[in-house]
Structures are given as structure tokens and as C-alpha cells.
Length: 260
Ligand code: NI
Image 1 (cartoon, rainbow, N blue to C red):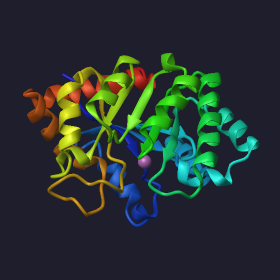
Image 2 (cartoon, rainbow, N blue to C red; image 1 turned 90 degrees about the vertical axis):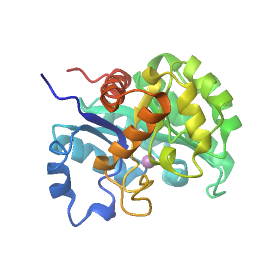
Image 3 (cartoon, rainbow, N blue to C red; image 1 turned 180 degrees about the vertical axis):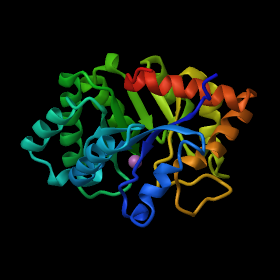
């Protein structure tokens, strides 16, 4: 029987936090029960890195996109370049893209403009999207209503909003990305969301090197830490750890359209 393995739908292993031991760490993933990882671009340079890493490791896939904090470096040519990259066989999504009003730099107007352009690029290329949205619930939904091709699917990464808003995205067929926050003392809201959402629409994510689950909160995160997130979801839903790993793995493959 094939062992069911964890699928980390969102990581940043090309971050400098992994400069010393990246290859060693990635080589240890299979033995630790981690079967697949998606390296997510968040800037122009980290998008290049995500493509490179997906070429290097058979179990690593990539996503291409520019995070709201970095969009001031974008031009129409950058969008064309992202579209070209989605043609690579191991590039599985456009992201992470979205809005982050926690910081007001770049301005909301600039963030919105490039969010829309990247959503339109994903629509044109028929790709799923990875959405980053912080303190921007209303604007994110409004823009997605107008510019997202819901039928291509995608994930609200690090979902941090209410159960009511979760229901809207779930109804659209989107997935919710669940990571370390579900283990935090102040993660009650997310626990409610996990309770409400069907397991078939949850995916596991680390956002490595950030958001390390309890009991290792504050240390560098990596995909092996997802076992703590699996435990939390299993407990919230009253099901086995194996079921959480198996179903979220299937979900991730369906969402990113990875066969096998
Ligand atoms: Ni991220």
C-alpha cells in the first residue's frame, strides 16, 4: 500500500532563512512523511526562484505571482512574463496575489490595480489562484467577484476572516489554506472556520519559514511541522490524522490539477 503523505500547498523554501540547509532539509521531506510541496512566488525574484526549485526537485511544484507588498515593481511586461511562466509543466497556480491593508505601502489603489491584472492573467491562462488577503475582506471579495474565474478554482491562503465569509468562498468552490494559526491560542476564529468547512475544501499549508505551529511557534517553520496542524484539524473534526492527510492531499491535487 502506498503511504499517504502530507501535501504542503504553500511554502517559501527559497527564503534566505533556508540558505544554510535548504537541500538537506528538502532531501529529508519524504522520510518525514511530506510528499509534495508548492513553492510560492511572492515577488519577481522569488517567482524566478520558485520556477528554479520546481525544476530541481521532482516533488516540488511552483506558483508564480507578486504579493501586494511588492507590486510597485510590476509593469505590464511583468504580467506578460508571469503568463509565459504558467506554461511550464510544473507551474500549477498564479500566486500569491491579493491585498494587504495591514501596511499602507504600496497604496490600496496600487495594490488593487495589480491584483486585478494578475487575476485577469490567471483567467486568461486558465490557472487556479493563490489569494493573500489581510485586513482587506471587502475589497478582495468585490474584486474577485468581478475579475476571478471561479471555475478555475484556487485557495484563500492563511484564511483569517469570519465563518460567514468562509461560506461565500466555499460556495464558490474555493479551498481554504489552513496552517499554524489553527494551533495558536488566538486562533479561535480559524477553529470555528475549520469546524464549519467541509474537509474536502481544506488544504494544508505552512507559509514556511513563517507561522510555525505550537509547540514550536516562533522558530523557523518547515513542512514537517504540518503534523501539528494535522493533529489540530483531526481534533476539531473528530476524525483520524490519516483521514486529514489523505483528504487534504487529494484536495490539493485536485486544486492544482496534479495527477498521480
Ligand atoms: Ni506566503
